[in-house]
Image (cartoon, rainbow, N blue to C red; front, side):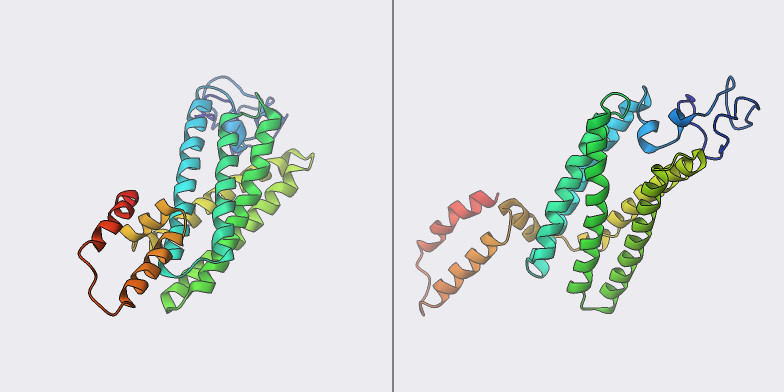
Length: 257
């Protein structure tokens, strides 16, 4: 949409400040001069209306989806295995990334540059840190051959994302038109790779159950461990459970619902 409205330069146009001298075949409408203000960064593609409205909407929805995915992954690890430092760190990193993405989408670079760059400075590093933590967590929890294949896949995706992010950052700091154009391309590549990484959680989420939602609602493993401790204490009495005992669990059941 930004390209159709001629708010950014086409990806295949590397002739900045020289494109006014010749008409580009890919352009629609009057001749358009490509300058540094029109490099097709993700932020530039969503800084002017009407595409800025969709940019804010997509980033807000993406922020919510990231928050839900990292939370479900956190509860899934607790249910199937046990909580650990990597799992807790991944949850915190994912939520911080979600907050940064919300800032990026709602503070466009041409309208609130400082807040936009603060959001981007939070989103990109925490995004790559999250996938690194999840790759390490996958290796730690892997037991079957298929789980090790998934860990290898996530490691390869993480390495590709890291390379794309580093190249995008290095080229962005250069004054060359061509290098900044390449920075925009690697920025798009990085975001696509990160979204593909999130797609790999479909393997774990296929086994989600009601217990996962209970752990998520309780905010951690405290509820499940407390319930197991209570059942062990009842089993240790050596006799039948009194008829009045189910009433003791009724408030807990209601709180779960």
